[in-house]
Structures are given as structure tokens and as C-alpha cells.
Image (tube, rainbow, N blue to C red; front, top):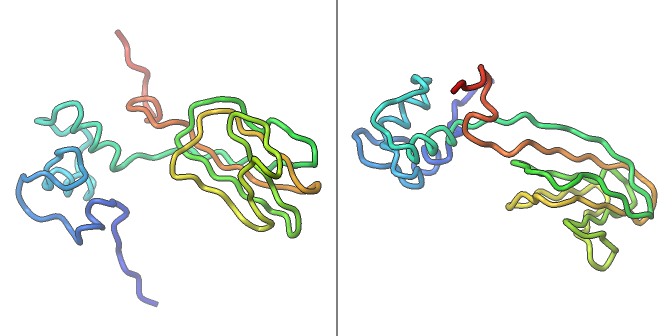
Length: 164
């Protein structure tokens, strides 16, 4: 069995590799290719010479998250699944073999107003909802919610708290 190395960095993967030189990489917020390549190869975290926005973009290329998996039961009665909170990731799965799951964001769903997650299906929106998550089902069954906290510089990184 052969193994092939691939890049999880979308900028490098989309262009087939980093050219040499200090020209900005497309979609990187002006971060030069050589710094992205250095960071991608495990370079040091604080690379001088970048303005704060470029440093933020460089950090975002390597961001990580702590995923929270929450199995839940749903019924034919509307239930609040999660309160309004800042999230960096959202994924909901309907584990049922027969029942439909209806999801509402900031409002209680009905079969005609909720996002329909069919039996065995899932919903992973491009824009992560920050408002309340409500659910109701066409029958009683189970689902799974996977979320992650909103990524903020310095907030999700391990290490000591900054002092003033």
C-alpha cells in the first residue's frame, strides 16, 4: 500500500505548491509564499516582519479546534438543543433510519419552516449559526451534534494566560 502526502493548507493545495520568493500568496491576506511554506513545514510560530493582519491570516492557515460531540434525542415536541453562543463549527446528523429531523436557528422549527435533515442525513452549513438551535422530529429518534468554539487569536491556543 502506498501512502501519498498531501497538503491540508488550502492555499498551497489549490495552487499545487508554493512558488519561491516573497510575493503574496493568493487568498492569504498578503502573507508571502516563503513564510507560508516555512510555517507549513513546521517553522516557528512568531515570524517577524508581518503586520497584525498578516500574522492573523498565517495563524488561521494552521488553526485547530476542540470538537464537542453531543448525541441527543428528539421527539415530536420542539426542544432547545443549544442556546445562543459563539461557534466556529457546526454539524448536525440525523441517526434515524426512518424519521426526519427539522432544525431551526433562532426560531422553533416546524416541518414547513425548519431545515429538513432526512433519515441518515446531515447538515453542515457554510456559515456557522450563532443563534439558538431548536429541533423537532417526525417521530422519536436520535441525532448527533458536533460543534467547536469560535476561533479567536490567543483564545483557543494552549499556554499561559497573557498578563498585563
